[in-house]
Amino acid sequence: MEIRFIKINKLQENKSIVFLINKDVDLSKYNFSDTELNYIKTKINSDEKHITINQYTHFVYLQIVDKKEQDYQINESLRKEAYKLCKHIKENKIDSITIANLTNNEQAIVSFAEGLALSNYDFIRYKNPEKEKTIYLTEINLFCNKLEPRQVERLQISTDAVYLSRDLINEPVSFLTSEQLATEIQKIGKDAGFNVEVFNKKKIETLRMGGLLAVNKGSVDPPTFSILEWKPEYAKNRKPIILVGKGIVYDTGGLSLKPTKSMDTMKSDMSGAAAVIGTLYAISKAKLPVHVIGLIPSTDNRPNGNAYTPGDVITMHNGLTVEVLNTDAEGRMILADALSYAKQYKPELVVDIATLTGAAAVAIGGYGIVAMGTADEKIFDTLKQSGNNVYERIVEFPFWDEYDELLKSDIADIKNIGGRDAGAITAGKFLEHFTDYPYVHLDIAGPAFIQKEDSYRGKGGTGVGVRLLFDYFKSIV
Ligand code: BES
Ligand code: ZN
Ligand code: ZN
Image (cartoon, rainbow, N blue to C red; front, side, top):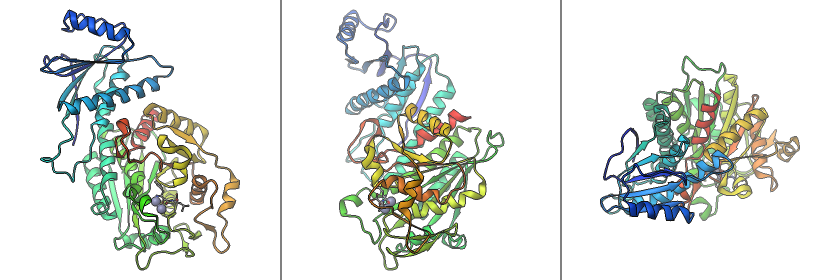
C-alpha cells in the first residue's frame, strides 16, 4: 500500500491538519476561535508537546518542534512524534492529512512526514481486507514555502524504497525463494531504471562459487546470483561503488540446525539483500550521479539430504579452501563468493550489508548497525554521519589482525567460525580474506527485523540500511 506526498500552496478547510510550531508561534491567521487559541496557549505554557483539537468534521493537531543540541536529534524526535500521531490517525480512520510547517526549519516537515509515512506501513498481503483493515492514510499534503520539489520527490522515493524493502523481508520463503527474489529484482529494476542480470545455478557452477553452492546443497530450490547496476553517463565516480547484500531467503541453520525459537524470524535473513535492492531503487529513481553495482548471492539454508556438513572443506570462488565447522555460519560463505567476484570491477569501495551474526545483535541490540572494515576512516566518518541523519546509527568495531588468528584451520586455509569470542568481528575478518579493495562490512542482525512494534520502524522487517545508504550516496555526490 503506497502513500503519496503532495506539496500544496494553500490550506484546505475542513481537512485534518497538523501544524508544526515553535512555542512562540502566532496562530492568529489560521482560523482558530478565541477559546481554541486560549486552550493552545495554556497547553504550550504547561509544556505540552502535542495538542489535539477535535473540530468534529476533522482534527487539528499542533506539534511543538523543540530545540535540541543536534539537528539530527530534533529530526528523530519528530519522526517519533509522528508515530504517535499515526496511531490517532488510524483510530479515526483518516485517509488524508496536511502537515503545515510554521517553523522556519524545512527539515522538520520532512522528518515528521517521513515518520508518519513509515509508521503507516503494514504488511497486509496475506490478510483479508474485508475482515481487518489497518491502513487508511494514503495521502500526506505538505504545506511549507521553503520546501523544494526535489526534497518532496526524494522523500517519496526513500519512503517507497523502504516500503519495498520491508515487503521483501516480510515475504515468507513459501513465496520468496531465491528465484522469486531474482524475479522481484528484475521487476524493480525495470520500474526504477537500473540494469539487472541474474546468474542461474549453471552459471554459478561455471563461476565456481563454491560457498554459495555449498550452502545450496541442502536445498531443493536453485541458488541465484543477481547483479544490479546503476551507471548514469554523468556518474562522478570513475570506479564503481559496490554493495553486496546477504540473500539467505531462509536460514534454518542447516545441519547445525537452529532451535525452533531462533528460526521464527529467519525469513528476514535476506534483509541485507533487501537493503541493497531498496538502495538501488532509490538512487536510480533519484537519478543520482553515481555508478553503483549491487551483488546479491541468494539461497535458502536447509538440512536436506545432501546438505553441506560440519567438517566439509569447500573451495571458494577465489580458490581459498574453507573448513566448515558450523553450517549456520552460511552468510559468510555466500558473501565471500560475492566479495571475491567484486574484485574484477576494481571498485572504489565495497560495502556489504548482512544479518550476519547473533553476536552483533547481542553486543548492541536492535539500536544500531555494527560496522568494521579496511576502508579509510573518512568513509567510516561519512557513513556514521549518514547513520545519525537517518537514525540508523553506526558503531565501529575493531578490526585488528589478531582476530584473524581465531580463524586458523588444521586442514584448510581458514575455517568458517572463530569460536565464542568476538563473533561479529571474526565473521568480518573471515570476509576480509575475499577482498582486495577498500571494504566496509555492516552487520544488521540487530535492527533488521523486530518482533514488537518499535515506533516508526514498525514491526517485522524494518528496511534498515536503505535510508542509510541513500543518504550516504546523496552526501558524496
Ligand atoms: N542469520 C544468522 C544471524 C542472525 C541471528 C541474524 C539472529 C539475525 C538474528 C546467521 O546466519 C547465523 O546463524 N550466525 C551464527 C554464526 C555462528 C554459527 C558462528 C550465529 O550468530 O549464531
Ligand atoms: Zn545461519
Ligand atoms: Zn543467516
